[in-house]
Length: 401
Image 1 (cartoon, rainbow, N blue to C red):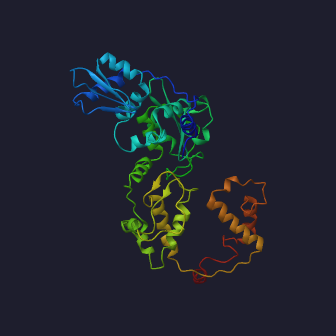
Image 2 (image 1 turned 60 degrees about the vertical axis):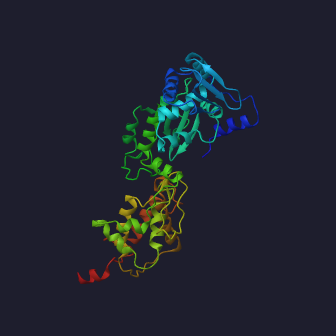
Image 3 (image 1 turned 135 degrees about the horizontal axis):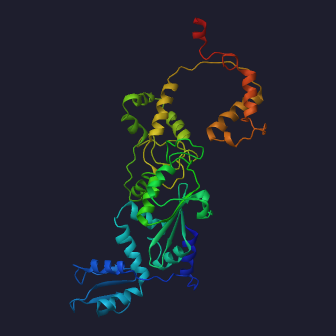
């Protein structure tokens, strides 16, 4: 998930290159005021630390300050004016501190996520500000987030669908309130309701072009609820995973039937569920839950950046239906199919399962799932009652009638 803009800036620093273009930053009065507020009540031996230097009250003179550059001689006896001038020369480091300590605030998922966007825990202020001047792009599901910096060190964020990465703002629907994202995520581009917000069916054509840090976080969490919080828990080693058996044991009411699916045959049925529902093509989360704490599933959990900590409501609802279907006793049916017809049935199932039906053109009769070929197969093989090969689903009941 590394951003090439950050990498280029970092390489320039490592090579001692003059190509690192760090933007000129003005020191806002809010940032300087926050420094003074932070120093209030601190003892001289409790300095306020920035990247490359520290500031403290001067214990030798009341009302004066001391600046300690890393690896240099300290400057003592600074007046408030002197301190402002010294910090103005180091405005990038001060504004960086101010953004994350005062604007973003809390040591939690919001702060971690916004720092991750610009790799604030791995790169220097100079490297990041140079990259921010160009725009740092990060992917989060189907979102593209572009972070930039103003001449006052303020962070601004452009949030849009990744498919609209190169589009002009003028060509997109512009939003300002992050909660407007609730309307954007409700339906897909065909107007169908999206029950799973992490499905790869987010519609495009919109942009939040100028969000502050808190609003950017709010918008991302509105598009993909709880994904940042779970991502942060995972990074902190605190992701509380609820595996299949544990989650199913909690089901009650109409969903309690799912608990009956475990009949000692192992966990093959859960593999089928995970393969059907939890593939990257169906959900952008990375499945971390398994059959139980000791038993992993045999199917891949996906490559998403944010984890899935338990079977979701969509999985549980689907599993309820499959539990009932799998409780039926198998029967043997006999149909006559040509080899091509057998392959066509397989093609139709694959196309429906992979969501490719809309991509198969009506004129492309080479495709087994082509609509005209499917209609021909139905006309040939179904009887007037809709039975494949004229064979009733339950022939015993038909005999009783």
